[in-house]
Length: 381
Figure 1 (cartoon, rainbow, N blue to C red):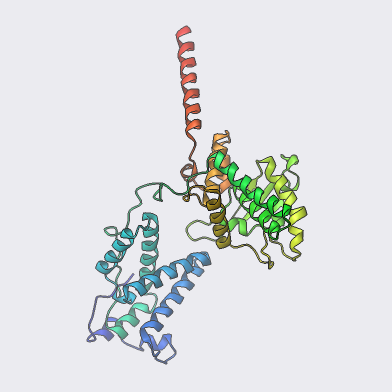
Figure 2: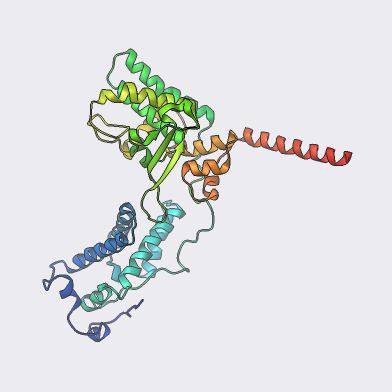
């Protein structure tokens, strides 16, 4: 990769090899009125195309672009004007405002990748910056000013904990109560209340993320030959699982493990969903026939949680944490749980596991009993 030093207007042409000006090649000989903005947008489009050519997910590239645009706007500097000092000050402010280490590291990774693309001599962007602005861009990130990944978990210790079993039972009972209450009073909203309750139960019963549950179709469910009692809801094919390192969605099959889950889904698909009267493959529909959104799921969960008086640190993602934790506590194999939730590594599943103090006490008692039995048998021998 070739980089260019900071130059004045003198000597610019020699730095980029002379010849036709790179700007003319980019804009077909027409000079944009707002040159800096036009060049910045053009670089971002080129970066987006490069990421697309690498097979990265569209949402990943758009998220990185959003980060670059946000930093440019808040710094008030174009990328070819960025310095390590300015960037250090910006990220210092982010830590002051309470941004998580993992989020800061993600931002830094996006910005570093953008600057690598901007500096790559195979593309014309650095030459344009030198020719038109008299200043070459520079890579402002290295191992000395990047946030290091020191811990397996860097999030808020108060957040994303699993529900206790009592909290989970109370939450689902509260959701069911809203359904029966609206039906008894013949009030509007009973269908929506039943749908919302089924959404949250499905997220827990299959360990789903918000995006995953919004993209579930009715046809994604199927029978499991090893679990005939679940009927047509014996397994769920998750088509939009979270990808790794910007890759596209990852598919996985999640087997049904709770008897009540199949019963809830059967009732919803047979009795409630047809009342929406829309031709759609989606499992969970809005009143206008579209798919429910992740934004709606977040806001609806928060309203129900607050009405019930549950701790505010509980979020929809805590349902997924609860699924992992409760399966581990109930004795399911660690590898099975890992495959169910689509984790590549067991260490990731371990982060999701927050077993209760009762479970830890029982496990300790079993271990002590086993050690005493082994010691006793050894003494007899």
